[in-house]
Length: 338
Image 1 (tube, helix red, strand yellow):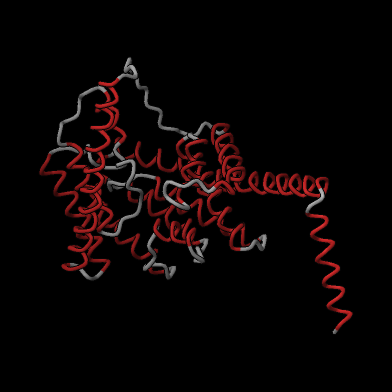
Image 2 (tube, helix red, strand yellow; image 1 turned 60 degrees about the horizontal axis):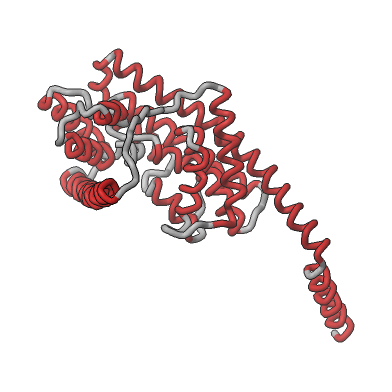
């Protein structure tokens, strides 16, 4: 055993010597940099392609619904189809976006079928008038594909988390056309308020690659023109702080409403098929009662009108209600845009 121990000690000494060698250290860092650039490019191309197709699908769904409003009557049927799809693929108990976020903090496998299911389900929901956005889909599509690439390349858990965040960055970038915001969003998900700098290069490069790909195919980004002559002074800062506090209360209200309505659905309609169908009927009846189709889909039309001061003051309350009714019933999509 003595010779083996001596060899191991000598190997450890050589490794330490090489690690402290400036040339070796620089070469190793350069190799890691080029390695992550290559992998991030691959991630950006794959996730960006899927997200761009998804973006065009959502655009078609919104345009078709606006031109043929009768399709909203199929919302209960769409709910049944979504529940069936998740049950058929044995994924009915997944937590959606929460699964992706939790997988960053602990070891949790995200199957590739998550991206397929959320892709189809979100388009179905938006097509038939469900009040959802696309950011939940972006999180799940990017996260599941990113982690799958990491698994295929046999990465360790730390590197797979970086791949997951790179996938999220690429998906958000291709869907929203905001590469830098998408990259930093994904890095902050790892720990709220703390930047996960180990993923800086992979996230930014994957995000830029996906953005350039989406832009090359003329992806339908939602661009809002905002003109403002607000100056940075004490009064303006005070108004911004007040707005932030009010938005915090609205966010709390939204979260509470989501939890309460989801609990009520589960209590009165324990069967997921009945729950989804009933939820679709409730949304249709509520829109008929209000005599408006403003609260179908993501709600970009409301945002655009709000920027021009043409939206009712209580519109945010109704959008909260419609979104909570939609997601609580089992329909799929994001919550941020609404």
